[in-house]
Length: 89
Image (tube, helix red, strand yellow):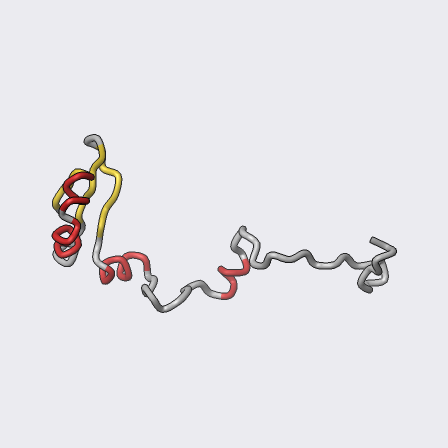
């Protein structure tokens, strides 16, 4: 694994990307490791995800996500289980 400074990686990005096919490339900032670049094949192997093939979550995983899955409010229900009329709201 080669270590690149942020400046080197930016200036020689094409070379860094090409070397990702041979192995991970470490990027440092102010002498501290901050990122690792890997090939798509390596990423897919490590993460289990297939790049460009859509989400790989199961339905259960998707339902358990903490962020909202829609951006609208559901209407409230009355005690009888019916939708509340505008007068009841």
